[in-house]
Each structure stands twice: as C-alpha cells, then as structure tokens.
Length: 499
Image (tube, rainbow, N blue to C red):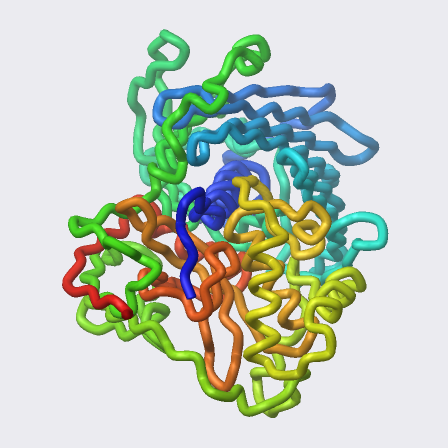
C-alpha cells in the first residue's frame, strides 16, 4: 500500500495556492469594480497621457525574492497595462523561479476589454486569455491543439485602473473610509470582493527614509494585508501573506541581486508542527487530532466532516477506508445522479483532451473493473511523472506533456485520466504528515461504490490516515484554505497503526 516518503515533495498544492494568493494580492490593486461606501465627488480623474512605470521589490522573511514591474500607457481610447513578476523561492532545498507576464487592455474608464496571462516556471508553462463581452468573460486556456474555451459570468463590469495608486490619485483619503472592490484573478479565474479600510496616518520607513503615509488594511482570501500610501496615492509598502512584503523601488534596485534560493523554505514556513512524531506514517490507519486555529477565519469547518473523517467539537478522527470488494459497476460509469458530474472535463482537468484519452485508454488496455483500472492509472502517474517542485497553475494536458510536477500535478493528471476512462473522480486538498510536520498536499478521490482516496505522489490506494482532507474540488474551492495557512494548529490525541 505505502511507499517510502524519501524525496517526497509534499507541498505542491501550497506552491499553487501561494502563487494564486500572490496574484490575488497583486490583482486587488489592478482589478476592481468600484463600490465605494463614501461619495465619489472627491475623485479627480487623471487621464494618462504618456506611459507610466512603477517598480516593487518582493521580500520573504526579509530576503529579497523577486520584483514587480508595471507599465501603463495610452492605447487608442483606452490603456494597456503590462505587469511582470519574477519570483525565486526555495522549495525543499531546490531553488525555483517563476516569471509571469500579464497584459490587460481597458477602455478610458478602465473597464476590461481583454487580458492575457503567461506563466513560465522551468519546463512548465500556462497561458490564459480573455475578452469581456456583455457581462461575460470569454476565456481561452492553453495553446495550439490544446487550446480550450470557457465562459465566466461576471456580477457586473470589471474595472481595471492603472494600479491602486491611480485609483487613489485625487482622493483625499480619511481615517474611517472603506472601499469595496470586485476582484478578478486572471491566473485562477476566481472572483471575490475585497474591502480596503483607511485606518489613519503613521510614519513608515522606505529605503532608509522615513515617510508619513496613510495606513490601509484589507483581507484577501482570509489573509490580512496592510498597505501604506503617500499623499499622492503611490503605494510605499505592503505586508501580507506568509511574510511577503512589497516595497516601492527603482528599476535598478528591483533588478538587483535576489536571495536565489537562499530564503527560508516556503514549505517549512507553512508547515503545521505536531508534538508527537509518527514512526511510520504510511502505516497509520487511525488518527485523532485536536484542530485549533479555525476561529476567526472564513474556513467552513463542516468541510472536515464526511466520508472517512469525523469532526466534532474541535476534534477530528480519520480512519483509513478499506477498499471495497466491488465498485458495483463496470467502466464507463453510467449510474444516475450527480456522480456523473465527476466524469465531466473542467478547467485544467481536460479529461476529454485527445492526448489524455489516448493515454488513459492505453494504460487501461480494455479492463473494465474500476478498482483495477484506478490502481493502474495511479501507478502509471506515480512512475511516469517526475517529482519536482514547480510553480504554476496545474493542467492535466500540460502535466502529460512535461511529465513533471509536484503533488498537485500528480493529482490533477490522475483525476483527468480516471474521468477519461469513466471512473468518477475529484481533487482532494488538505495536509499530510512528512518529516515531523504536516504539509499542505493534494491527492485524488475515486468513486468506487464509495469515495476512495488515492495519492499518486506516494502511490497509495487508499491513503494513510495522516492525509487530512480540508476541501474537495478545483482552484475555486482550494482558495478557501488560504486563510488557514499560518494559523492551523494540530494536537495528536491518538494514533493507530496497521499491521
């Protein structure tokens, strides 16, 4: 059942969530529909007549790990916004770099017309583009034969200012004001509202100079963000997710030397420590934990209860489920009800892609027993995908092309392969025990008469009981756990081992 955890890169889902949170954090300065709770008559609209550029340095635990470069210029009757982000992180003693280019075309009032996002991280790449049209965004992901189209309904117009400083130009902000923004994250295509509160004035140190600034506070996906802007509306400093800090800079400083993998390991920053080590986590069949840190977060604790988990009064019990003797159907699944929804392709789980279908049917080789088929597909992903940290939005088609990735890439590809041959399946996201800590992790669940957990990274079916599920579903659901990172606490109450 279990394999050695040596060399196991557990936290691929953390990297994906980290990147989505960073993009969401930056996007709350670029994508919004204004719903200001105070009168807007104090706003002075300032047309951009020539290109403007700003630079920000990104620090993680006081180590420089990247930069943001944003350029805004007039194009016809609107503006073109170009944003570049370079980030270098240390992931389990491996330096990993990621580069993102975001281009947005907006009208004279900064209403969205088009956008394009390209993410590059080593051999992994991800592209998404979109066009706003009458309350919808028409989206394309991938490229060439792998290009796919989607439609996303918008609650209202999406307005993109040149940046948050442009929004605040001409505003005399006052303590007690609040601004509500409708935010679209173009990397994950998720939407949410963000409220920014003006808390008052204070002195902040920027590049060895002390500057009087307005302090702004907000919540982005459950993480507290603090910003300081000067009287002109320019952002001086922002502090937020997992020790990240953005500081106003110049081109020369921003492009200067970075930590280059010397920063604190991102995985360890988010890991949840426990007081009792497990001698062999792959053989843990029962686990009882006290869960702390949920209070004050937006996370719905009811997600913790169901299937092989029981959560009551702050205590969770996880029991490794036995494999059923029979799934009760032959593939492809044709049963009634909502279970058929778990056979459908969705964003980044391209189970109907020609290459995915061809690979899946080739592995299965005509077998129709869902249990045997599920194990074959899981073992194939485990054996054929190199376990290496990457920073990107996982796509089954892209993972199949590169044969490289972390736990999220393994889980996404396995889910797509299972659906391609007719086994209902879904993504599961939570934490798993490794080297004395619990790390954020992703795996797969297949419906085999009941939901059965499968971990292609560890080649486990079912998974050991140190796999604590937080949510199921794609990136839109996975975003729900960002607010837990850095707050979740666990106490081991009991543990039982399998023979």
